[in-house]
Image (cartoon, rainbow, N blue to C red; front, side, top):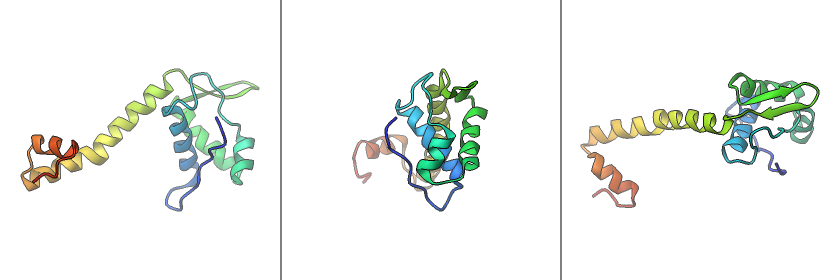
Length: 125
């Protein structure tokens, strides 16, 4: 997995950022199906944060079905985790970016074709 540990921001709770960081590792293939994720102890020591905070972040992934526990061995990436993260993020991307873009384009009278041209590098004029 490498030593790419997250740098935290002050805008979101740490446990959310840990969950997102691990999701990023899954979606980019840095953590594959049935691969062990770093232990709570390892993460808490490396990141210098409370183990309970790390556990809370990992619990989010367990609740989403992205990781599972092997008794006495640790937490592992679930089958289809990559696809599930991608699917969730596509929905979020649509809701956060595409819907507002379409709404603003309609207010400005920009056609779908003009949007496509802009996305391809045209200036929209």
